[in-house]
Amino acid sequence: MDTLVVVVYLLIVLGIGLWTGRGIKTMHDYALAGKSFGGLIIFATLSASFIGGGFSMGNAEKVFLVGVSNIVALWGFSLKEILVARYIAPRMMRYPNAISVGDIMAEHYGQGARLFSGIFSLLLCAGILGAQVGAMGYVFNLFLDVDRLWGVLVGCGIVIAYATLGGIRSVVWTDVMQFIVLAIGIPLTLYFGLHYIGGWQVMQNALPAAHLTLPSEPLAMIALLSLFLTFMLGETLVPPYLQRLLIGKSSKDVINGSLLSGLFSIPFFAITGMIGLVALVMQPNLDANLAMPYVIQQAVPPILQGIVVAAIISIIMSSADSFLNSASIIFCNDIVFPLRKKPFSEKGELMLARIATLLVGIISVVFALSIDSVIDILIYAYNFWAPTVLVPLAMAIMGCYVSRKRFIAGAIAGIAAAIVWKAVWLQPWHIDALVVGFFANLIVFNCVDRPALKASKVLDAQPSASE
Image 1: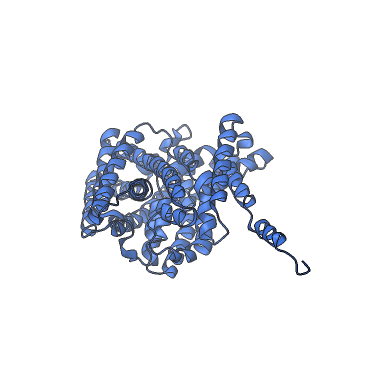
Image 2 (image 1 turned 90 degrees about the vertical axis):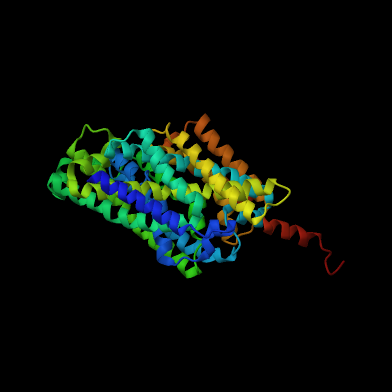
């Protein structure tokens, strides 16, 4: 029965994706779907996009190992979403024709910046996509007893099919359905898990005290702050989330959707983390990677397990399709188009985008088969973004003074600092390299080519009235 529920669910997702993706005629439609989405739809698709395998099963795994401090660290992502809603979302309507990060970067820094950001954005999306596809294989294997390879092929094949045909329109509408399923299924897992072990008080009494408190040692507190900043900075304005800021009907829709998404993530991260604590009480010697699956299999009634498994699959598919769609748009719009002297026709652009979606999806399958910890690969992928593209992109959107010199100097400083901190100094005090790279980029970006200094030099060069 559980398998039948999952099969029917997958067929429904595929049907929705293929049906809603009809009628796409241009690259702009493929990327933005005519900017036709309201605040609640943006809230649902944005939430479904960032709640992937790392923020669900990966969070349960880490909380199983280290305790509630990982939930607090993930709230860095929640704070980021709230700040984006407050400071970034209101300004996105200034880019009515943008379909990617590269379009915004090119407007402020030139075509070289478009290509640079395109390459690093593609690496980021490919890494996160691979993590989601890899998690999909584990889910099919654990819950449905399907070989991991076949799980990857089936799950990713469905995502590739509707994302290739319908672009962002298919992705958004399947995200909405997937969001509804995961918003019901994951809280159900925690509810039945707590009921299985005897309630909240039993869990508190059974857990090590360290799992329910934040670290008090200075080095541990520094490590927690570093992880908080890692999740805060690692996915800020990454292509799929920036894309959600470009598809709204109005600025109000984008702001409300982003804010609701950030607020929703706070209790959701707590729920997925506490599932890890339930698993620790149920089986202390369990492989941490199996924390959430174990609770589902042991505590959720058989008749509801199919719904919960569908929720887990929804979590992964909704994140995978978003990063797949963004990766194909980045490849075409920010890498291929700038390097091609003769522009494509509208039909040619759309065909290239669909071919790119198919190829990126296939490559992600190969990459996914070598993945171990989903949340660790997410952190690794973040290193392609925060030290390089985030600072110049955010500064430009915020209306700060920007220039090519600032962009180049900041990127060099960010990359160099991240490499030295990680490869040479081996990340002392457990501070992640992307945090160091981000602040190096930020400091150098604001110190180079300062407008006040340039203005004072011009004034000094002017002859005085007495002369």
